[in-house]
Amino acid sequence: MTKVAHFISASGLYGAERWVLGLLNNLKKIDAVLICSNHDSPSLLKEAKKLGIATKLLKVRGNYSFLDFISKLAKLLKEEKVDVLHTHGYKSDILGYFAARKAGIKIISTLHGWSQNAGLKVRLYESLDRIFLRYFDLIVPLSDGLRKSLRYVRKDKIKIINNFVDLSSIPEPEKGDPKLITFIGQLIERKRVQDLIISLNYISDKNVKLQIIGDGPKKKELMDLTKKLNLQDKITFYGFRKDRLQLLNKSGIFVLPSLLEGIPRAMMEAMAMEKIVIGTDISGIRELIKHKEKGLLVPTKNPKKLAEAIEWVLDHQNETEKIRKNAKILIKKEFSAERAAKEYEELYIKRLSPCK
Image 1 (cartoon, rainbow, N blue to C red):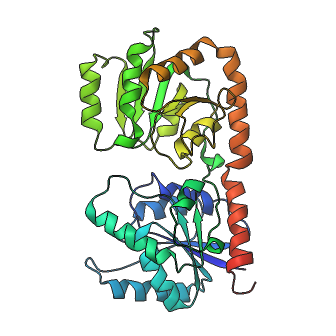
Image 2 (image 1 turned 135 degrees about the vertical axis):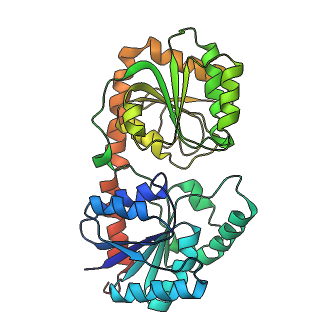
Image 3 (image 1 turned 60 degrees about the vertical axis):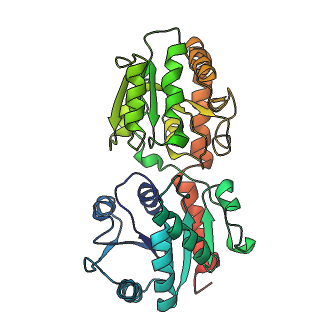
């Protein structure tokens, strides 16, 4: 049986970390192990162990050297008899590339996305990552938009497998309060949470409320805007929450007013939980939503149109039932972790296995 090691250098359990757990939890035909260093994601290893996923902790010194880390990772790959190394993120891509070549095995990377408005150091690392990705055996972007960012990679080395939701981690859907709106995500400029806040001023029903789940550099500015518009009694800022899905379950509407997205996980989770989703008419979100069939689409940077969409949902509760069901069916059929795991297994076995 082909053995695959997933190597991820990160912290927390909000982005790629949850993605990795979802994939590993659904692999059936692959012997898999999750590797992290003691400076990366110890919490990720704990969560993996709870799910029964095999894990390995790579112990390195506080100020480990580049070469020392690569040697230790390569040694671990050989000891574990790994056939394929699967990396996630620029740090694990770069370190993993050298370790995989030293161990004499193949390497694959899932491209989760590029940073927006990042500092100089991150931008330099990501530029270096784009160079190294050219020499990988296979790259799997999560969306067509990410595929287009790989300008200098051979087409035969790229295979799109859409982002997914691990349905086993989704709570049983509750009807929720139809007048409670939820946003989940980073509080950064491209998410345009300010448009959602401003839209509340245009909604005639004064009982509509908003819960904002997430953290980021725009938080203070958004809280100041809330105070300026005198909406403190309507908006709750929760910050980062591990129980985000339980909070989402209490609401009836999920809104994502972004300027740029891949295929957004939070929106897929909301659709799987039978919430009405409203998103901006941009690439990525359009791959999930067909207007008034699986959700609602609105123009970017347009709080008035966003308010109109929210009011339409409130005024057409009977019609929204079909939309909710259609959205859940789409996620289960095309964006489930089970579906993605089967596609990855095919890649591991047919394209990357040394025994193919």
